[in-house]
Image: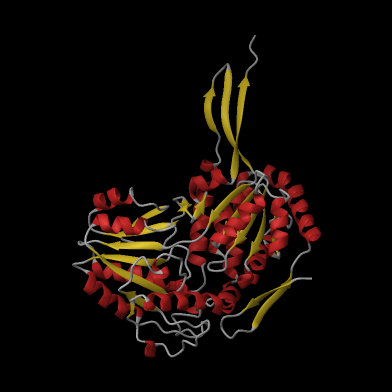
Amino acid sequence: MTVIQCISPIDGSVYAERPALSLEAAKDAVARARKAQKTWAKRPLEDRVHLVLKGVARLNEMSDVVVPEIAWQMGRPVRYGGEYKGFNERSNYVASIAADALAPLVVEASDKFERRIEREAHGVVFVIAPWNYPYMTAINTVAPALMAGNTVILKHAAQTLLAGERLVNAFVEVGVPEDVFQNVFLNHETTSALIAAGSFNFVNFTGSVEGGRSIERAAAGTFTGVGLELGGKDPGYVMVDADIDAAVDTLMDGATFNSGQCCCGIERIYVHESLYDAFVEKSVAWVSNYKLGNPLDLDTSLGPMAHKRFAKVVREQIADAISKGAKTLIDPALFPQDDGGAYLAPQVLVNVDHSMTFMREETFGPAVGIMKVKSDEEALTLMNDSQYGLTASLWTQDAERAGRLGREIETGTVFLNRADYLDPALCWTGVKETGRGGSLSIIGFQNLTRPKSYHLKKVTV
């Protein structure tokens, strides 16, 4: 029997462990979900939406348990209060648009013909959620999938082993049928075997590029729909007319919040040469104010990374960049808590270029590189010189200029004078190795349902 463990970044202890389901037990869970789906889909949309929102409210009532659990599992400081703001915002928004998003598209309603396109639930949706924001990322798919009439099987990463269990319990407690929303503990082999067997009608995965490739390989030939949100190396571009203080505040927060473990975190910044020196100076001062430490301490503003192996990748990228001429600007003496393991000091690098892994590969840690540019054309070339494309953050007073540049950036979302935010009214999507598909918004509902056409010729006398 495989036992899945969560190793806490706080002290390296085993915080939680659960036995992985056997393949037969996992197949049984899928069979129960499939059997329950038709009945669930026949319930009025208003009932499904209401139950989902009740589940969301119930999880909010568990904050005293959920928030420290997150700190123990992946290191986010308790002072930030969990993920409830985004979790609630996304749930409430998709609930508000569900009726319109799922409404039939009527082409003709005459005395001779009725022609329409309806949205029909896929069936069983498999959600594989990541550890960095275990509740917010899961709810992106869980809420609209359940509202649309699908049943959902949820699998969380080992690092946040308890999150799926907690989320499902909240929903079941308020009346969502147990077989409609299930949490499972699976190893990689069983996960791949289920997908390869065509067990699911749709699979949503958030995680690494290699993880996404594994999902696609498993699904090959099954014609299972797949949605993938994978790696990122999101850029910021600070133009000559930018509000520099606002840019520093937002971009540094976007680069370092959650110890830099954000899907749409800022990992590389290009600054117009006229603002470069001031931007760098202000950025160093901003980052130097963090307090690295135990995330259960209310004074801690920067917790450990989720696992020491993730911090190792960041240290290796920084060391490689230094060996190629980069310079670090944050004084290590400010962060004596950096233990060479999961506790990692934030860092700002200059003298960087795209020959360095640090500026090309996903870092996913509290470190950012800043480069000087002379023009929009140079910045555009650098922003697009990436295998990823999730978001890009532009800083200027000229919205038209940003719009023109945004249309040339190979990315899923273009931000103007903000960053690191998921707007539930817009489609969350990416290009290149960031993945495919999209969640939230009306498009998210469309991806979690399939179109079904009705061409009805009425009987006439």
